[in-house]
Amino acid sequence: MNIVWLKILLLLVMVIVTCIAGMLPLLKLLRKSAASASSLAKRRGFSLMLCLLTCFSGGVFFATCFLHLFPELNEHLNHVIDYHMDVSYPLAELLSCCGFFLLFFLEEIFLLALPGLAHSHSSSLNTRVVQENEKNGGDNHGIEHCCHETAFGSDENEDSATHLDFIQGSKAEPEACETNCETVKEDPPILMKSQPHAHSHGIRSITFVLAISFHSIIEGLAFGVQVGVWIGALFISLMVHKVIVAFSVGLQLARTHAHALSWVGVSILLFAAMSPLGAVIGMFVQNAHIDSELRDYIILVFQGLAVGTFIYVTFFEVLLHERDNEHPNLLKLVFMLVGFALIGLLRLFDEHEHNHIHEHSNEHFFNIFICLLLFI
Image (cartoon, rainbow, N blue to C red; front, side, top):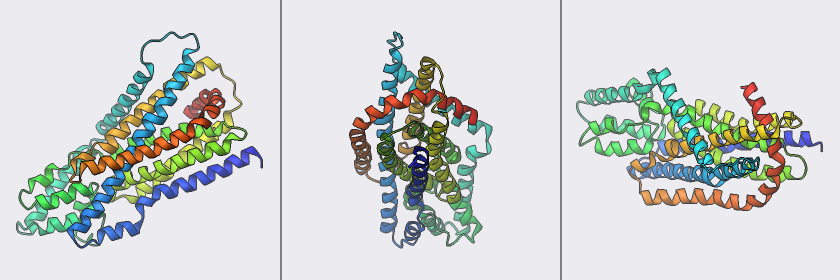
């Protein structure tokens, strides 16, 4: 089979498999069974399951950052130093920090540019909680019922405008809401206080998708420039990693946007297309000729920024809020370690073939980045 057609076929498989893995957290069967849970114990069980899966995905992102991306950055830095560049400053760490602050800055710029998203969620939530409580004559049963729907995305009682608004305002964090169901009977303001990060779900999800997609494009570039027998080995390695990360991305987006599953689906489709996009760009420009030294300097900067954005996503978007809910932190740690160990094992098996593949792929990266910037 022609090498180009083989790559196209493998890229189609990559898109399909990545979409399936990313859509798994959106399965209606799981959401319906969670919404129909009749007892508090069952609702706690579903909330715990979502929490532990999120911790697993956090371990996946954590390991990807420090066992995959950061070693790649250091390796390329050592390659650049060979150009008679005497550097004692920790450039890899500096570039990573720049990427971290860049994504932080972009998120804040989005919040300033779109002030309507900054506080509307939490303020509307507080108002509707009070309205719901007043309509029930001070009885918290209505709030408890709403919270039951909120935690698991039930659509059964959306005929009530108050219930619908409440669901849209707060069901992004099931475990936090479940805790509130118990504490609101004693002190209703606790419910209002426990939404510290609800104001920026939309903006943070945009930066989350952008950072993950940027990393996926970089992954696809290595595949696009390959020729020869290493295509199959690289595809298998990339595919295993993509499936795990796609499931983690789908889970994270589904939890923070349970009321906008269509948006989550579109985000998953875009994420699935990013690696093939990078591969296609690599296939088109793999024969371009540009000064190798300048090319490697530009690659170093892009790789460093990618590491920083992934650090931001790992700690600010995935792991930051998991310590605040009611579930046991030691159990969360165990699932984080499982996700970390999985990527660590993949890295161990991938190390040998990576040494062969990397030496063929570097020479095309600068051309690819230039074309990518022109494409954007």
